[in-house]
Image (cartoon, rainbow, N blue to C red; front, side, top):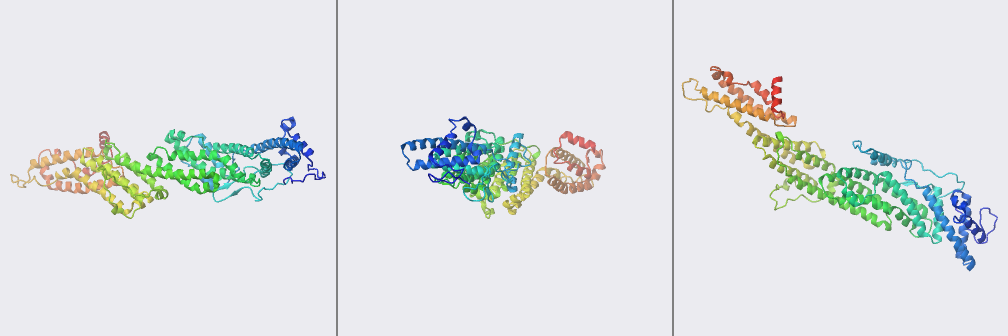
Length: 629
């Protein structure tokens, strides 16, 4: 227990007591590091008996100073106090330095916290990142705290709480320094403050503990980057740093800062000076806290671009989750600036997310590519936009709170589609933004479809892309719920309409060849069929079908089910028409010369040829397939 204060002139019966000014002064001078080699090499606070003697001596001298003993004694007492305070400052620093290692693998254990900082299994970072991850994981294991050894003296907590480390549902305050060392620090701090050395005490404590916090930061992979440094990083590097920051920030706030605050309370709470533990806490963590939050601030004010949205939302979610803990740890008046900075960053991240969504909508509307994609397949813009809004739907809980206004069309912008909100009047702002993005994507795709010279391919392109939009919506529960079945049915009708337009544009001329009109005549044939007209009709059909087959075998319908449905729909019209035409007119051709020059394909062969369509085959591949058959 702490050495008890004694009144001036008490008896010498207790071996551990120091009575009288001369005896106290002698003890102080014995440990004057400027006058003794032994005093420079040894530390007082490694021997409990020496600790008691020295602190009793300091108390004795301080009593003499406060009692106005006379000019001679006052001068000696003042000199002794200066020497004693210099020595206690060294002892204070030595105890702190001896226990200033960064938080290690035996410091924490929490299965829930462990999950928070685990690296995503799919994220293959560089080896040094993996090492940092191991350190972060280490910071989430909790075992029994260590205590210093060798002391026969019974120690107690200065606060009388009976327990050093503590935890709440998220904050995990741990023992940074063994209890007996904390008690020694408290004893020294009390005497330094009493003697008027408050500033020196705070400076020593803050400088040593800040170094320990800096070491923990390095172990967590938190770098000292200015806002400018962060904004100059390429996005790939920044993504990795954001992932690391999110994991590390939770440990910093809930463990590192919270534990430093608890340590300050235990060391300084019984010292007596008003708010000294607050001052020491801020001296220790203000710089690291600013360093930590500057990174998030740099992201919040960086140049906006669509690829940044989801990492900004990750940062926003992490910070909003941490905000109650930040307010709890930094609940002191002196730490107002930290709480304000965190709240302002959160607000700027929210504004950045809203701004990026708006800019993304404009980018989709104005995406300028004019080169048609080969074969009328799915445009890269369609894949990108639908994957993007599928991800947006996964952030629905966050974005529902952030997106509070409906999308709006610039009244003077004639290059934007109209949107009738009455069709989706029951939808919230986020859902309306997603529907608006889909609408302007279709608007852009309609424009791109006009760059195809073949009208049939233009319709096939629209069909493919709108069908892809529908399938992406159906494949995401969240996205489908937001878009709604009513609008989904409208989109389904859109791609089916495009499929109908394609068939009309592609096959009407072929089917037109299979009509009866123009074949019958009042001539020499009893049958009333003009053989020459019939031969020309077969030649036209053969030429048109061969050209359609050649061209459309190179076109693409990537979705296998849609591809088969389209082929079946074509055959349902073409196959019966050709079979009927052959049935009516085959005999007229076969009764003449060289029928094989006119009837070049059977119904079965025609059906096989149609099955080649929409496979994206080159002319060479088509030839090879025919040879293999």
